[in-house]
Image (cartoon, rainbow, N blue to C red; front, top):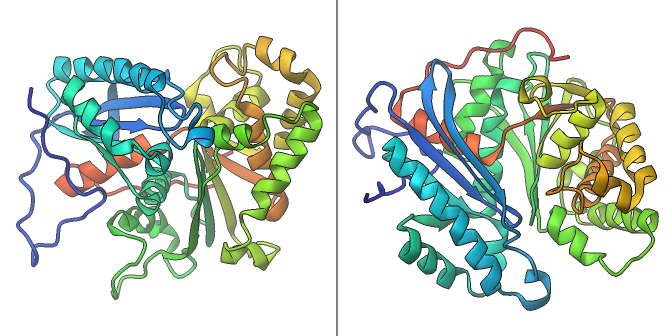
Length: 376
């Protein structure tokens, strides 16, 4: 199979500049793959109304960033593990006959000295057109994936995406957008954070930042600190220091109508633990609102468990027990910087943003409907 050449993410067609793309056939399948510092994850879906229906998925911890902090390069063993995972993805793409796809790599590949060699290796071994995307595009895709979770009363929105190698924060002002149009205004950011002048009130990105610290890279920074509680505290304060150049950092107390949406494995794991789920249930986690007290209680329970307890705790999982405290340190820092009493939980992110962007470009999604009331 010859994969279709990927389109520019989030590029909404402008007829004055180029011809509109040929509309996708009804029910045509799309693929989105997110190759991160720690994991390889893919969704295959078809458009359905203003959302999409997932028909297949794949997720595997490949730990591609292992050793990157020390060497500045991707190791042979981690590259081999990743290619094995990508071969499974290729077979799924072929089995479903997917022609529309976007397969992207993020922070580890932006930093690795041999990233281009790895991209060629992937192409040679799998035939997949993997591409490295810049931080702004990664942040933008995370934002549009969360559009349907924006409350009608939200005027100031902070979207936080805690990844393996980096953390993206985007602060958006939608106070001038009519409440019923706010989710759609967020979706329109798929064309870029700098919106053209228009008579239609639009979402305004006040500031955004990509901090080169995620759950894997932050953990590696403090791997030599033996005391569990001390390591957690150091990670949290160290991450907060990296927010100094983020302009809303100095604003202190959030304004009226402030909403935080957190998207990452850390946030969803904390939410699942808060709910006491013995088996993860996306329908219960995605869209949940957690108070700052509930988040803090879960984090304190993780600290009480200690490394051995976290390893044995089925709520955390084998793939995440070594990374949950670095993620929790980031989460705690964010809740400390912007004192808010709640966070919306999003079990969605880069893959979902890739799907929305492709489908929006092809014009196969219906107009997004605003949610009614707050998500509890």
